[in-house]
Length: 418
Image (cartoon, rainbow, N blue to C red; front, side, top):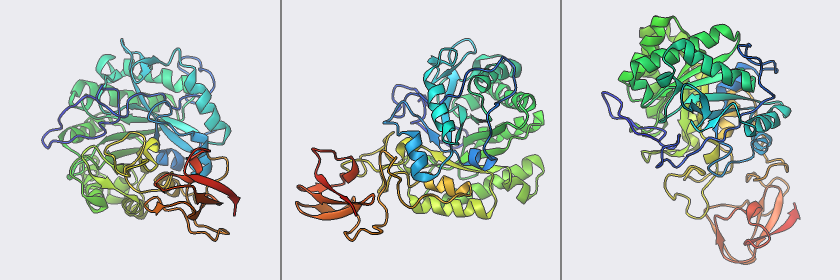
């Protein structure tokens, strides 16, 4: 993605989240979808909406890039019902397009994928903006024109939820932020009941100078979204304690900007995390996600999400190969981090992976008497493990090779269900 500098402190985040040539998480074939387009100017979706807690817990997903997982399999394995599809950018002349290149007018891939999610009782939100790229707010010229562009997205995919991810370089442009906030306000008015989140960069002070100007712009327009979320990573954060401290400070900013009480500010505050290794080589593991989840539930935050489902699995071979768009660079089971968003939504994730999942997660052996497979251990020929409710034996030396995906020519032989 493109680079920009936050002022006054230097802050870089979500470099993986865009289409700059150097970005790892390039591409946006997002789970877009739905049924056909609605008539221009129609209100949001006619589909049945999920509760706002699900839209508030929807993790980010790019289903056409970065070794995308099957969303239906993730739903089966975790209990998650909603996904945040990223990103809508400007395709030129104030026209919305996935990643700025795939016009929504000719999009046929996304509707099919969203239909698959909705057929399983789920739904999607679409994220507009992101780190880098050209946003509609930079090109449309007015809040009304910007809103008209985003209304096409709402109508095309029959959306009940939208995320405005306002960060570098757009949020350094006061006119662009005026257009984006104005567009969010107009969409909120024209689509009764639509869920709107505003996501921006996080710093040790809660958010930086431009983030504070964004809040002031919203105040000046009299706009209140469902939540303002910060991203406390890529800014020198050291573990969950630094993240929760940033949330406390951001809460104080919301209070001072809008005149809210502490409780009201928390009820309009959210957090968007990054799992595993970040761009700045910070590491956030399962325990960190649990700590922030505990904070979010105790303080009744309005949103808890993360980037990204594509990265919610352990890297093959070397556990930490460095920054990756398709794995977390930390030791984990598949979909460990998604299960935290499910808990925030108020649901209990499955303890084992259903057989419909393409990549079952290790779980407690249950009826299996063999020890559970451990990605950190070295196994040699004849070693026996349990994984996904099956018994497996090693055919030769192996380490960190998932039994369920090794295939006929892999190091593991499936001895059948326990």
